[in-house]
Amino acid sequence: MNEAGACRWPEPPAAGPLGDGRHASARLRPGSVADLCSAVRDGVRSGMALYPQGGATAIDYGGPPARPGVLIDTRGLDRVIDYPHADMTITVEAGITAAELATVLAAKDQRLLVEVPQADRATLGGVFATGVCGPRRFAWGRPRDQIIGVRFVTSEGVEVKGGGRVVKNVAGYDLPKLLTGSLGTLGILTSMTLKVRPRPESSAVAWTRLDPGHDLEAILAGLNTTAARPVAVEILDAHSAAIVGEDAGLPAAQRVLAVGFEGSADSVRWQLDRLEEELPPGRVTRAEGDGAERLWAGLTEFQVQAPGPVSVVVAMRPSRVAWFLDVVDGSPWTFQCHAGDGIVRLHGLDDPGEDAMAGRIESLRGLAREADGTLIVPRCPTAWKPRLRVWGDPRPDWGLAAKVKHALDPDGALNPGRFVGST
Image 1: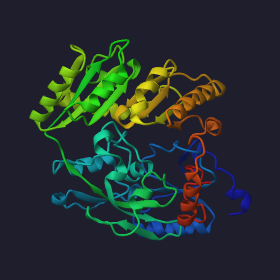
Image 2: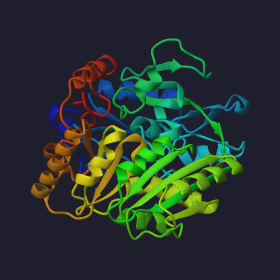
Image 3: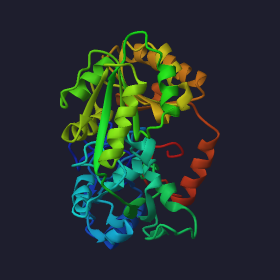
Image 4: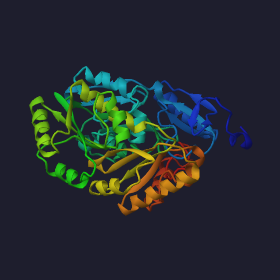
């Protein structure tokens, strides 16, 4: 291909969407790791960029694709490689969906401690490449806490192994954690070894309506000292509470505090009783059994709701959450707050245009700075991305990220443009 052709984006639908309105010049679906290695070598030799893709649930996340290239569909790599369930680990190829993995684990009454929106489409490679988390991150940790081994293909077309298949494996560099959250810019994930856990006997959520004028800081401080042990502490405004609570039939005319518990039936019942003693009387509705499962699903899926064109994520110390929610102008936003983790997700409710939205984002970014936090924009129109600075203010560690990227992908072939340090 000549230089002019290599720089021209193909017209849609071409070989499939890459995100941000751009389409691939070719689409490959390797059925084996050997095929993937060969495809990568051929693509790099031809000067094409390589865009790994699974279920396409996050293809607009991050910066726009920087130059034309080949879509590498990883869904052909979807085998369960090893499942010694008594050891509570499983090794799977990266193209298996989160829903398929959940079905495999459920047969042994186990689960992966990662909550995944759009689980029927999202592949495990995509889940770990984006580092997606749900409401129970408060107790479960992040995806990087669940992965103990990884294999990935570099831009040289070589498969590299990191970690192992046993939990107590500390040899070598921690490549599993390095690859988690890297958006496919360091390597194409081929397989992962993951920790799994038994499913709990009981699960419940205390759905608490908060009266106007409530003291959120005092309520959250009380949860820090309670004898109960929540697995999730969520705060929803009235709009998001109505959406999340609808399927479970829960009241939602005002701000809601949702506190989740898991464990034995007796333990969960005791914790619910204890929480009701500590929270305002008469405001708690219990979601248990199937109702709790529907509510967990609603809380997870709301993360990818799109009432307007823009979504924002603010991360801060948990101790600053109450202050942030008290001072932010919530009228143009609906929010879901993972209060125990210091994460606030805001979805815009309208489309005021680029100029007005840039002002709103800058106002939020100023509050995030006051809270010693950060703000990213995981979803917005492509044309707005440079102005809204989707990855936030430049930080000193971006230079380090660029050096790691260059070491593992010297040609800059993998997902160029998507992440910090990737051009």
